[in-house]
View 1 (cartoon, rainbow over the protein chains, first blue to last red):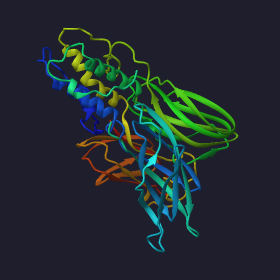
View 2: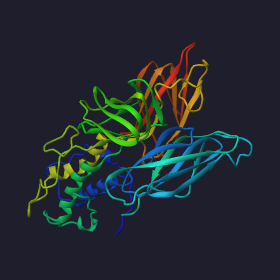
View 3: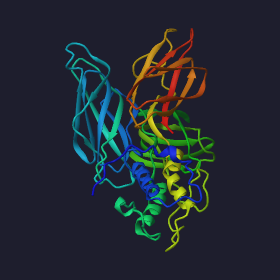
View 4: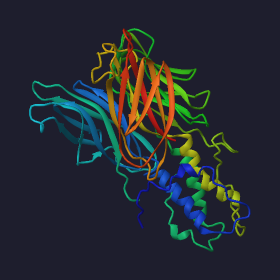
Length: 160
Length: 295
């Protein structure tokens, strides 16, 4: 039996729950415990995050810290016109994101570019936290500047 | 220890008090405490070089951590000099010489959050910080009631035919919430170099000195991290001038140097975030940190 990752219940709001004494035996209480633990170790405990970047040179770095996932999806906040190739030790091909080229002669300013391919960050979806360093290599179009101003990292939690 | 996926079919009426599933729930309770280690500061925005110092280059806030877990900064250094992690009044340093090498710098904090953390660099003659992130390293799980309220469960109750006590079930129910509250999730983090000269409102620098008009200096996205409306906590460090942080349609205005904090209730959605600064006449506005926490 596999279980989907969950972003609910909101486990942190249950920190003060009181189980009166006596309470009739109910298996639902233990099912609730399991649901909270499962959420904390999957989707709710390791959701998406945004981190600001200011990479206007050729190479920048993005540490990605995750639990229970092997892949993430990336969105980059960018300006100018260019291409970013994001790779990790586990994913030498990585993902390629381009921006500014669709708009013709104008450069992008504070726009998002999102990939459809996931980036592999870990070899195993172990229930422990680990850090992966992603490298962001930026190539500006000829005659233009290009910068990466932020990244959204969305962990892709597998069914377990 | 390791995590055990529970077959919820085992959590059925009539289950024995010494069932394996109940023991697994208790073991997972303790395991969660031991492994949950989200980032506190996910990344610095760009590589920086310091030639003289020591000077604070990035600062951020740590929240929660009532149990005083070690704060670890993983840094990638190149060149020659010293990198220091400050957590409140406690510090630890790493001396480096030569080619790029990654280090862990650990600090055992003296006080729980909110507390300011910072990375300080001193070049000798020149040190480059290529990359950095910061997270909590879980302490060993001690007996008794911890400052976060957490209590261990594995091996505490193992009666064969006894009823499972209310206290034991309550402990299990509370555990995940206590861990996640004590190590809150940084849904949004944007830091800026505390030293680099302003670029006059350029897109890459959250500082401006060339205008008394509001200047948009940063944008970002607060991604959805919950499936119901809930409260988020915002921290911002303003070293000079005035600033406005806008999250979706909600606006927060701050003024004066130092840390500023507020809370906002948000429904589940992705929210655009915009940071605007307003220098005074002849002065510089500088916004060094914006953090949004799911507590």
